[in-house]
Length: 438
Figure (tube, rainbow, N blue to C red):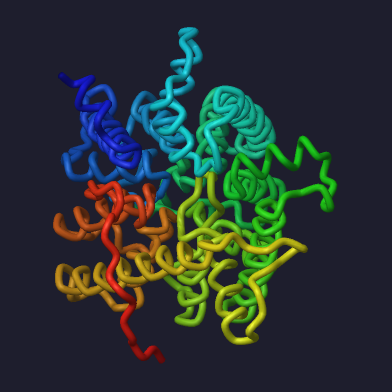
């Protein structure tokens, strides 16, 4: 009966159910006594919040991971991050390959939808490459991070911290197990704000995780030859570079950051959620810049969230085409016919969710300043994980709202909007009417 139910569900609904199931299992595991440190009273809503944040690779936390969870609990969080970053469908496909079974049409469609692939051809090879690429990059990141953390921790703990940090950074999760300051306040990577090696390694992991597996595969296959890259890869690399430079310059102008801090925050703000600067002291202009970067996010098929770099690119190209009366084109390619329409829908859906969530948030938490609310909401739906420090003090209602936002952000507003879509198409068309626009 369960098999028949699953068979009749559309891919978007199965992916949603998969993520929801993993989140619930994770929350139950994190509540086990062996996962919570002695003397710590962890409520279920905080365990659910942490599990959701991990699976949705967000990084918003109501509690400090280092002082709340045991090494086993931290390991479970790392597994949840890895599962969420790769995608439940990809993990399932990996197990299918591991036991030697072949992909059926349903499995291919699921992975295609989950990874934003153009077709279902070569799915098995693609999933294999994704796992291998992930392990290699995370291993290299952990090795370089170890040289930094071993100066502050015993070698055995430094190994665990390095592995956790590498997994968290590549999956754009923003979690850390470094511990808080002497007042118990979470400080992320601020103690390492001047450490060039850790800043560069973490930024590299975030960027690689954020550009998407398709782009990584194409770059390595075509040996970094720009002319041979597809339109998608050129758009992703160009937009990513532009946003990093844009963010670095403006954050340096608006706040008292070093160039290294401004660069790191520009990279991390897009979806990773690490911080080397006290966000509670960021200026209003800085908050606006960071909110815009969070809203855009990473690229399709990546471990990051946001509306995606390609969506913003298509919106700009559509507006440019309408203003100049020229076709939508870039890099000697014409944009697909429905690209602007789909990008506009995603953009407007995301804006609508942000606006309605900010209204609800201000009702639930009227004492929190509006700019902090906007920052928190965008951080949740873009699966970033940055906060001005209000997350631990949120009430149950606001935490539930954040959980829903993180879930929507990981799956995408368009996926959520199509969950209840049953129709296979309309057979009847009405004549076109007239409507004045603008």
